[in-house]
Length: 356
Image: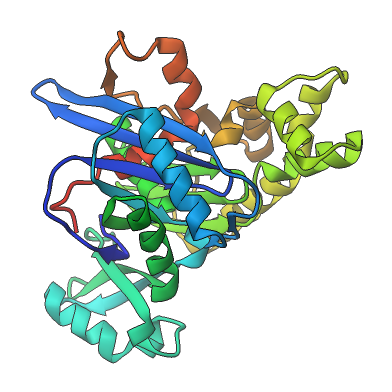
């Protein structure tokens, strides 16, 4: 586990905040002798234009929504873990000779231009993760994942959160938060290659995991908004009206739900291209299972459609599979309803202050 920017503060409760382009979600977990328990949850919708393509356009509006989120969730945590959208983060896997972490950090800084496509390393926040021993790798070598983002983007998210009266403890990356939630809740064989596919409103995250390590990531700037836009055009209505039809899953118009899968075809096409590229570059790359999350995971028929499209077992992500909840606060049907869209938030909430 690693973070693009580590801003550890003075401890205390921590909440995970998943900031999307249309919804922000809060997840707070509590650790007990019996395991991890969901303590607080909340979500609020964002008006269009507050965040566009991962860039915050209206900091005041976002801060206001974050304050609202803490109010509706009744969360009192002062420290938060949040994530940058993957398409504003450079993620690269590189082979290095074996060395200690501090030496590696200095080496990456000295040779920054070779590993990071930025003009000035001083304008960049970066971190790295040394992967476990890889099959067939020279014992004198090690594989490292580098994640880097422009400081102005990172600081933009920090600024909005701090204006809402909270402190950023860790800045993660959404694809890796998805992986954290997966590791907490699933226990597949080491030989399995699992594709984590999170279809959000405007971004689809792909993280392919093998032997408990990320082996491939990609972020597609396409998501559930493609359904909304297609509905808007088909029915001659506003984006907001089309979004409500998508959320409710029904309308006075016949067979609307049956067309949702068809409207996701551009997303599926890009996911397929990602799988093909992965297969062409990685040995033993057969994907054994897809675990799908995000707001679109609730679309009827999506599992069967993805099974047929990708010839692969597919299931809906359950980020509360190994996380308990208070039945006096949350009902089973509510947990099932929020589950698929909460995977990134759960992954963020699982991070601890001592995590890098």
